[in-house]
Amino acid sequence: MTRAEWKESLGIALQTMRSQKLRSFLTMLGVVIGVASVISVAAIISGLNQHISDKVNEIGSQSFFITRFPAFTMDFERMPEEIRQRKHFTPDDAAAIRELCPSVWRASPVLTRFLILGGSNEIRYKNRHVEEPILRGGEPELVDVLPIYQVRDGRFLTHDENTHAVQVTILGDAIAANLFGAEDPLGKEVRVNGLPFEVIGVFEPHQGLFGGPGVDDFVIIPYRTFAKLYPEIEEVIITVSTSDAALLPQAQEEVAEVLRRRRNVTAEKKNDFEITSPDMLTDLWENLTSAIVMLTLIIASIGLLVGGIGVMNIMLVSVTERTSEIGVRKAVGARKKDIGAQFILESVAITSVGGLLGVVSGIAFSLSVAAVFPNLPAHVSIVWTLVGLLLSVAVGLFFGIYPAVKAAGMDPVRCLRYE
Image (cartoon, rainbow, N blue to C red; front, top):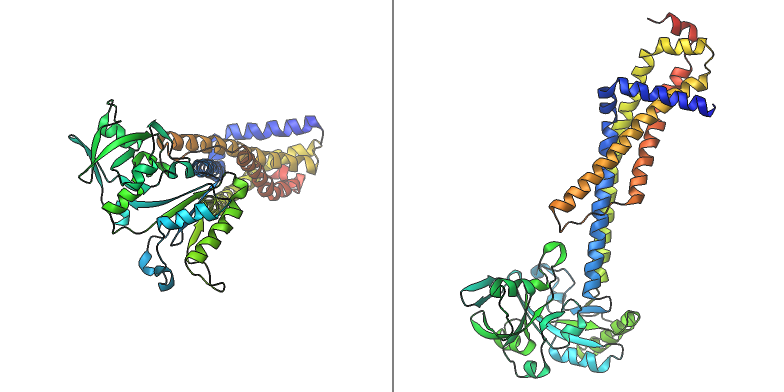
């Protein structure tokens, strides 16, 4: 077919769609839903992936954590006895890591008191109070180990304050704002769980993952002060960092060797501790989102399949309705491929318009989600947008073949006699 013939066939297809607007829209609705699903879910997942990546980078690509239990473990009672009987870490373990691991730059033990972990907290200043902040004890190295602890006003802890268990604190930005408002908090006395503490610093604003607890909700005090006030809390996490991300694997090996010696782990046994890097969060998230993407593609495929079946059904109806037109066109010289191309183009035109509407709907939905839920980012992917459009064209092409072949194979004599 020449370009003029293709243009004429496309014009006829579009004219048919304009003359049957409601029927054409209902026909392409399945395609619209399928493509919109692909675009919106891909946009949300893309935005979430970027959000997770940014948060991991904030924690520090040169840092890792040493814990007694596997990461993200909440149900301690159901863990094997072998794991539950593991020894607790101590500040001496962190000191040994700093001294004996050449690749390690900083290391700090951390103690945490939080409602989820069985400890309720309150911080007060005059008649204002904040309930359930996250109370954390750390050594002066903590600010160097984890980049998220950036002091905006004042300073961080000193070794002297930690050694003598001085009652000083650094507050998260949200806590400082709630307690002091426009007043300068530095040098003021607050009461943490009823005990007086001097405010020596305020952290830079930092929300947690998806709006959850972050540095904004932290109250940091010296490690030895924490251990003195809450001796019942023994669960120590050791945070470690290197001066260069390239040294991370080597540092982890050195730390593992030192801890195995200190904890008397024999060569044939596995580590009785866990080493976790922030990248694990990224890997865990990617595994989760890959399953979500697969589920979305299955749902979208069902929508496209339903839409394709609808397109084929309407095209078969259109062939029957236009039998006389087909006869006239063949009588004046139209070839089988001309008739087939006309119906193929009409089918593709319907699904292509459906694909465009689906893309617009998907983008609109993604932007609406981002506007309504700022903590749920969305980033429209050009790749998935093109995939959605190509899928819509492919559906029209595939499901339009049978009606086109049927129309092209009709006997012109019988077509002209059709009423």
